[in-house]
Amino acid sequence: MAWTWIAGYVLAGALLWVGLSKRKSDSRASSKQLFIVVGILGLLAMIAWTLDDLFHWWERFPKELVGLAGVLLIIERCVRIILARRRRGSMLLDLGRVPVHDMIISLFAAVALAWIAVMDLVDITQMLRWTFQDISLQIFGLSLSFAVMIQGISRRGLMDHGVFYGTGLSRWERFESFSWERESTTMSTLVLHKRTTMPVFNLMTLSVKSELAQAVEEVLHQHNIMGNGGVPKQER
Picture 1 (spheres, helix red, strand yellow):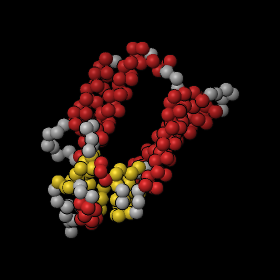
Picture 2 (cartoon, helix red, strand yellow):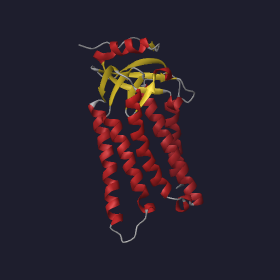
Picture 3 (cartoon, helix red, strand yellow):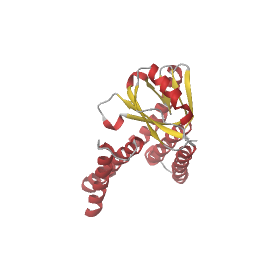
Picture 4 (cartoon, helix red, strand yellow):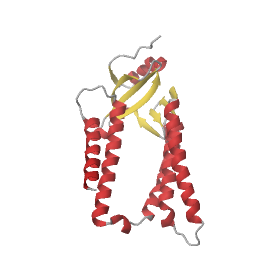
Protein backbone atom coordinates (compact mmCIF):
# COMPACT_ATOMS: atom_id res chain seq x y z
CA MET A 1 0.00 0.00 0.00
CA ALA A 2 2.85 2.39 0.83
CA TRP A 3 4.42 1.86 -2.58
CA THR A 4 1.05 2.56 -4.24
CA TRP A 5 0.84 5.88 -2.39
CA ILE A 6 4.39 6.78 -3.36
CA ALA A 7 3.80 5.88 -7.01
CA GLY A 8 0.55 7.88 -7.09
CA TYR A 9 2.11 11.01 -5.61
CA VAL A 10 5.18 10.74 -7.84
CA LEU A 11 3.04 10.36 -10.97
CA ALA A 12 0.81 13.30 -10.06
CA GLY A 13 3.85 15.44 -9.25
CA ALA A 14 5.55 14.49 -12.53
CA LEU A 15 2.48 15.45 -14.55
CA LEU A 16 2.27 18.81 -12.77
CA TRP A 17 5.99 19.43 -13.30
CA VAL A 18 5.72 18.73 -17.03
CA GLY A 19 2.64 20.91 -17.35
CA LEU A 20 3.94 23.85 -15.32
CA SER A 21 7.54 23.74 -16.55
CA LYS A 22 8.55 26.86 -18.48
CA ARG A 23 11.41 25.08 -20.20
CA LYS A 24 11.15 24.85 -23.96
CA SER A 25 10.01 21.45 -25.12
CA ASP A 26 8.19 19.74 -27.95
CA SER A 27 5.00 19.53 -25.88
CA ARG A 28 2.13 21.61 -27.18
CA ALA A 29 0.41 24.12 -24.91
CA SER A 30 -2.82 22.13 -25.08
CA SER A 31 -0.97 18.97 -24.02
CA LYS A 32 0.73 20.75 -21.13
CA GLN A 33 -2.65 22.06 -20.02
CA LEU A 34 -3.98 18.50 -20.01
CA PHE A 35 -1.00 17.37 -17.91
CA ILE A 36 -1.81 20.06 -15.35
CA VAL A 37 -5.49 19.12 -15.09
CA VAL A 38 -4.79 15.38 -14.82
CA GLY A 39 -1.97 16.05 -12.34
CA ILE A 40 -4.20 18.15 -10.08
CA LEU A 41 -7.02 15.60 -10.21
CA GLY A 42 -4.56 12.81 -9.45
CA LEU A 43 -3.04 14.73 -6.55
CA LEU A 44 -6.48 15.49 -5.06
CA ALA A 45 -7.47 11.84 -5.41
CA MET A 46 -4.29 10.69 -3.64
CA ILE A 47 -4.77 13.21 -0.82
CA ALA A 48 -8.39 12.10 -0.37
CA TRP A 49 -7.33 8.43 -0.38
CA THR A 50 -4.58 9.06 2.16
CA LEU A 51 -6.83 11.01 4.52
CA ASP A 52 -9.56 8.39 4.25
CA ASP A 53 -7.11 5.63 5.09
CA LEU A 54 -5.91 7.60 8.12
CA PHE A 55 -9.16 9.11 9.40
CA HIS A 56 -11.95 7.25 7.52
CA TRP A 57 -13.52 10.59 6.67
CA TRP A 58 -15.58 9.29 3.74
CA GLU A 59 -17.70 7.11 6.05
CA ARG A 60 -18.74 10.21 8.00
CA PHE A 61 -18.94 12.59 5.03
CA PRO A 62 -22.52 13.80 4.30
CA LYS A 63 -23.10 12.23 0.88
CA GLU A 64 -26.06 14.57 0.31
CA LEU A 65 -23.55 17.33 -0.43
CA VAL A 66 -22.23 15.36 -3.42
CA GLY A 67 -25.72 15.06 -4.89
CA LEU A 68 -26.43 18.72 -4.19
CA ALA A 69 -23.18 19.65 -5.96
CA GLY A 70 -24.36 17.67 -8.98
CA VAL A 71 -27.70 19.49 -9.08
CA LEU A 72 -25.95 22.86 -8.74
CA LEU A 73 -23.53 21.93 -11.55
CA ILE A 74 -26.42 21.28 -13.95
CA ILE A 75 -28.12 24.55 -12.96
CA GLU A 76 -24.85 26.47 -13.34
CA ARG A 77 -24.23 25.04 -16.82
CA CYS A 78 -27.74 25.94 -17.97
CA VAL A 79 -27.52 29.47 -16.54
CA ARG A 80 -24.13 30.02 -18.18
CA ILE A 81 -25.46 28.93 -21.56
CA ILE A 82 -28.44 31.30 -21.31
CA LEU A 83 -26.39 34.28 -20.10
CA ALA A 84 -23.61 33.70 -22.63
CA ARG A 85 -26.06 33.61 -25.52
CA ARG A 86 -27.60 36.89 -24.36
CA ARG A 87 -24.32 38.70 -23.76
CA ARG A 88 -22.10 37.46 -26.56
CA GLY A 89 -23.42 39.84 -29.27
CA SER A 90 -23.32 39.09 -32.96
CA MET A 91 -21.06 36.48 -34.56
CA LEU A 92 -17.81 37.83 -36.00
CA LEU A 93 -16.36 34.49 -37.07
CA ASP A 94 -17.92 31.05 -36.77
CA LEU A 95 -15.35 28.43 -35.76
CA GLY A 96 -17.82 25.55 -35.93
CA ARG A 97 -17.88 22.64 -33.52
CA VAL A 98 -14.91 20.88 -31.99
CA PRO A 99 -13.02 18.46 -34.27
CA VAL A 100 -14.80 15.16 -34.90
CA HIS A 101 -12.32 13.05 -32.90
CA ASP A 102 -12.66 15.33 -29.86
CA MET A 103 -16.44 15.26 -30.18
CA ILE A 104 -16.45 11.46 -30.33
CA ILE A 105 -14.28 11.25 -27.19
CA SER A 106 -16.53 13.69 -25.32
CA LEU A 107 -19.72 11.89 -26.35
CA PHE A 108 -18.25 8.48 -25.49
CA ALA A 109 -17.20 9.72 -22.03
CA ALA A 110 -20.61 11.36 -21.47
CA VAL A 111 -22.55 8.25 -22.51
CA ALA A 112 -20.33 5.98 -20.40
CA LEU A 113 -20.81 8.16 -17.30
CA ALA A 114 -24.55 8.37 -17.87
CA TRP A 115 -24.87 4.62 -18.43
CA ILE A 116 -23.04 3.75 -15.21
CA ALA A 117 -25.06 6.29 -13.21
CA VAL A 118 -28.43 5.22 -14.65
CA MET A 119 -27.77 1.50 -14.08
CA ASP A 120 -26.86 2.22 -10.45
CA LEU A 121 -29.96 4.40 -10.07
CA VAL A 122 -32.19 1.62 -11.37
CA ASP A 123 -30.75 -0.86 -8.88
CA ILE A 124 -31.04 1.57 -5.94
CA THR A 125 -34.57 2.78 -6.67
CA GLN A 126 -35.82 -0.80 -6.82
CA MET A 127 -35.12 -1.11 -3.10
CA LEU A 128 -38.05 -0.59 -0.73
CA ARG A 129 -36.31 2.21 1.13
CA TRP A 130 -33.84 4.61 -0.36
CA THR A 131 -32.89 8.23 0.31
CA PHE A 132 -31.30 11.13 -1.52
CA GLN A 133 -28.02 10.15 0.11
CA ASP A 134 -28.18 6.75 -1.59
CA ILE A 135 -28.40 8.28 -5.08
CA SER A 136 -26.16 11.33 -4.55
CA LEU A 137 -23.10 9.85 -6.29
CA GLN A 138 -25.21 8.81 -9.26
CA ILE A 139 -26.71 12.31 -9.55
CA PHE A 140 -23.21 13.77 -9.54
CA GLY A 141 -22.20 11.30 -12.26
CA LEU A 142 -25.16 12.38 -14.41
CA SER A 143 -24.24 16.04 -13.92
CA LEU A 144 -20.68 15.37 -15.07
CA SER A 145 -22.05 13.50 -18.08
CA PHE A 146 -24.22 16.49 -18.96
CA ALA A 147 -21.32 18.94 -18.64
CA VAL A 148 -19.01 16.81 -20.79
CA MET A 149 -21.65 16.32 -23.47
CA ILE A 150 -22.47 20.06 -23.70
CA GLN A 151 -18.78 20.93 -23.93
CA GLY A 152 -18.30 18.40 -26.72
CA ILE A 153 -21.18 19.40 -28.99
CA SER A 154 -21.33 23.19 -28.54
CA ARG A 155 -20.35 25.52 -31.33
CA ARG A 156 -17.47 27.96 -30.95
CA GLY A 157 -17.05 31.43 -32.33
CA LEU A 158 -15.47 34.86 -32.07
CA MET A 159 -18.22 37.20 -30.97
CA ASP A 160 -18.63 40.95 -30.49
CA HIS A 161 -17.90 40.65 -26.78
CA GLY A 162 -15.50 37.74 -26.60
CA VAL A 163 -14.79 34.10 -27.40
CA PHE A 164 -17.73 31.73 -27.04
CA TYR A 165 -16.69 28.16 -26.31
CA GLY A 166 -18.66 25.38 -24.70
CA THR A 167 -21.03 26.94 -22.23
CA GLY A 168 -19.40 30.27 -21.55
CA LEU A 169 -18.17 33.55 -22.95
CA SER A 170 -14.63 34.76 -22.25
CA ARG A 171 -14.49 38.51 -22.79
CA TRP A 172 -11.80 40.06 -24.97
CA GLU A 173 -10.22 41.99 -22.09
CA ARG A 174 -9.28 38.70 -20.42
CA PHE A 175 -6.78 37.86 -23.18
CA GLU A 176 -3.36 39.43 -23.64
CA SER A 177 -1.79 37.50 -26.52
CA PHE A 178 -2.09 34.44 -28.72
CA SER A 179 0.07 31.94 -30.58
CA TRP A 180 -0.38 29.08 -33.04
CA GLU A 181 0.55 25.41 -32.97
CA ARG A 182 0.44 23.05 -35.92
CA GLU A 183 -2.13 20.30 -35.35
CA SER A 184 -2.43 18.67 -38.79
CA THR A 185 -2.31 19.59 -42.45
CA THR A 186 -5.78 21.13 -42.23
CA MET A 187 -6.07 22.16 -38.57
CA SER A 188 -4.13 24.46 -36.27
CA THR A 189 -4.42 25.09 -32.54
CA LEU A 190 -5.06 28.66 -31.43
CA VAL A 191 -3.53 29.24 -27.99
CA LEU A 192 -5.04 32.24 -26.21
CA HIS A 193 -3.05 33.53 -23.23
CA LYS A 194 -5.20 34.94 -20.43
CA ARG A 195 -4.44 37.71 -17.97
CA THR A 196 -4.21 35.70 -14.75
CA THR A 197 -1.67 34.92 -12.06
CA MET A 198 -2.75 31.26 -11.88
CA PRO A 199 -0.79 29.21 -14.44
CA VAL A 200 -3.41 26.45 -14.40
CA PHE A 201 -6.03 28.71 -15.95
CA ASN A 202 -3.92 30.99 -18.14
CA LEU A 203 -4.59 29.25 -21.46
CA MET A 204 -7.52 28.60 -23.76
CA THR A 205 -6.90 26.34 -26.75
CA LEU A 206 -9.13 26.11 -29.82
CA SER A 207 -8.78 23.88 -32.85
CA VAL A 208 -9.20 26.05 -35.95
CA LYS A 209 -9.31 25.14 -39.62
CA SER A 210 -6.10 26.41 -41.18
CA GLU A 211 -8.08 28.25 -43.84
CA LEU A 212 -9.64 30.41 -41.08
CA ALA A 213 -6.35 31.27 -39.35
CA GLN A 214 -5.85 34.59 -41.16
CA ALA A 215 -9.42 35.69 -40.43
CA VAL A 216 -8.97 34.74 -36.76
CA GLU A 217 -5.84 36.86 -36.51
CA GLU A 218 -7.62 39.85 -38.01
CA VAL A 219 -10.40 39.64 -35.40
CA LEU A 220 -7.89 39.26 -32.56
CA HIS A 221 -5.87 42.26 -33.77
CA GLN A 222 -9.06 44.33 -33.86
CA HIS A 223 -9.38 43.69 -30.14
CA ASN A 224 -5.72 44.56 -29.39
CA ILE A 225 -4.64 40.96 -28.83
CA MET A 226 -1.17 40.55 -30.27
CA GLY A 227 0.29 37.32 -31.61
CA ASN A 228 3.53 35.46 -31.02
CA GLY A 229 4.48 33.98 -34.39
CA GLY A 230 2.92 34.02 -37.81
CA VAL A 231 -0.21 32.51 -39.24
CA PRO A 232 0.25 28.77 -39.88
CA LYS A 233 0.58 28.06 -43.57
CA GLN A 234 -1.64 25.52 -45.23
CA GLU A 235 0.10 22.55 -46.73
CA ARG A 236 -1.03 21.75 -50.26
